[in-house]
Image (cartoon, rainbow, N blue to C red):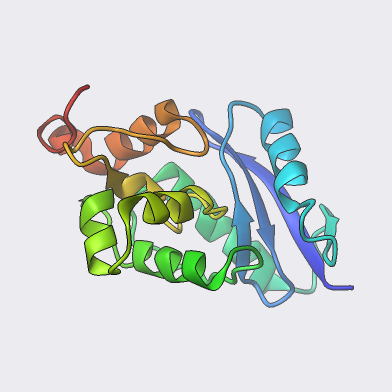
Length: 182
């Protein structure tokens, strides 16, 4: 049975649960308001992939796992960073994975809209929105960079407040000129 190694990590403003496979690929990452919150979310989200064994015991002889967790922690603290984290999707349909790959092309410090992304992928905005919402690798697959058609904050699996937090950290002083209030 393949193993996913997980760690609960945090910054002064955010908590996350991170899962990495034995090759050092980031397979899952969430956000929440506390360590227990992110662990509960992780258990619920990953209950649909019972073929993986979850463990918090990181192997000391596999530096790739620790490196990926460290890279994620850096991105969690600095969403605008350009750190490249290796990703392996263990969830999602082929269409969702196509959307997530497209999300990874949105550069730090920029945003797009659901409508623009749907047009680029030749799909309906609601189908696109559903695929974006199914993303289970927060920040590294930057679904927080997708805004509503009027450039306002819309749904985010981990709460619109966390989406605003990530975008404010990432966009800095340009946040108020890029994101419009409801």
